[in-house]
Amino acid sequence: MHFTGTVYRNPYWPTWPLLEITQGCTHNRCKFCTMYKEVPFRMSPIEWIEEDLKELAECDPDARTIQLLSANPLVLTYDKLERVFKLIHKYLPKMEYIYLAGRVTDLNNKTVDELKKLKELGMREISLGVESGDDWTLDRIHKGYHAEDILEKCHKLEEAGIDYWMTFLNGVAGKSHSREHAINSAKVFSQCKPMLVGTGGLTLFPGTPLLDEAERGEFDPLTEKEMLEELKLFVENLTCDCAFITHHTISGVNLSGPGFLARKDKIVGALDHQIHHGDLDRMASFRRNKRTL
Ligand code: SF4
Image (cartoon, protein in one colour):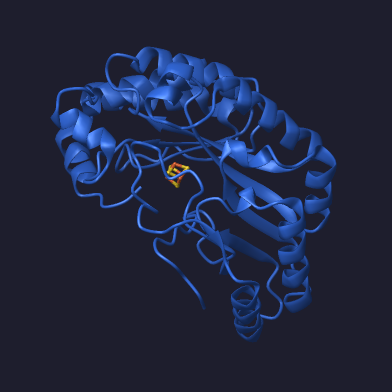
């Protein structure tokens, strides 16, 4: 198999085969991320993709699910994705469910009709690393789009009938804009229909511009308690009827599962409990020991 640089497997689909169809990230500018810094973006050579599919077919010819790599394979044009998807079906004829990650802007180059055709070819689920719905925050971290783009592109996916995840990056606005980040993200997410909202907590990794800024006193990171307060504010304002998962931020407390609205009060209560009684030192130590997103 060909794997280049960092391989991110969706931890919620731990057994799905992985197929690298692109390398690196087209954007590579988010201030909190070093995942693909050393890997220039390119589409994998089609011969590599075909070789890997042959290998996957030898291991599990009946595979019905697959995750495509790397950071944002969704950016490929319709024609290129169609070619790859047809190859997947050639080698794995029982394939039903293709999952891949992407940026909001990766949907710029596809029409709703093209997305519908990709869905017919198996593209059933997309993970969008949205991070924030607050324009000030999105500019601050160099995400390269604004709230109106998120709404437009998510509605495009809804029209095409493709399920998608939205992520919220807890803590990424720092102290000065924490409130706006939480409330405006919840407002934007709540106008969409994701199958799942996921939250991760910011860790300042070596090599990231955000850590450099923090060291120069230009970025004011939240404490663990403030992270929890921000997450609680986000949850209180979120009205999506979807699944909800949270990781990175709280160790030892499982708030993840389906039916967010039915569980919302319970989640808020659990966060409140952590704010007042949680082991904040342990959470900080857990975050300090993390090595990647
Ligand atoms: S967070 Fe995602 S979009 Fe941003 S640089 Fe990292 S991989 Fe690319």
